[in-house]
Length: 160
Image (cartoon, rainbow, N blue to C red; front, top):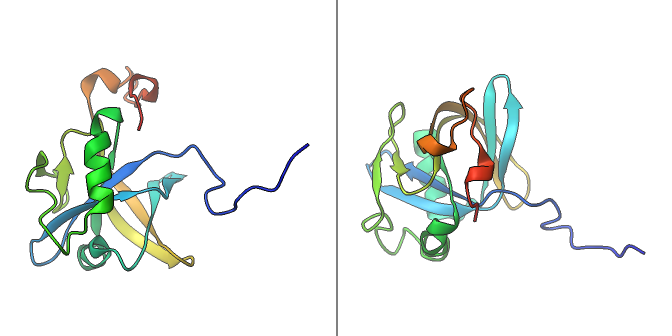
């Protein structure tokens, strides 16, 4: 017999991601995000949901770009830190390994096994979140996670 379940988080499993961003003033930040997924394969696009009260929201709205960093279990402490501390209170990236993205003005979290550079092409407010439609510009992945055809072998990543 089935019982009614909670609606709020009813679709899973889903990837735990860290979204890195940079505002027009040069301020860099990152936050933990639970609502994300592929929304188009042609052209390749993601949908990423962010609560408007988050510090990173303003930076993303200003710049129109973000990097979606896929976290694995080795990133558990970083994920927890970025999900519980606000960029309003401190420079969250000062002790995290980053490098500039190749095609957009945004930091990449280099310890994550997959990093997806993206440009925001649209958004919709769905209630608690604004869902950003993000055109995938470039995907970085650890060499051992890339199949011969160029796709990512997620079975080789111990997802968080």
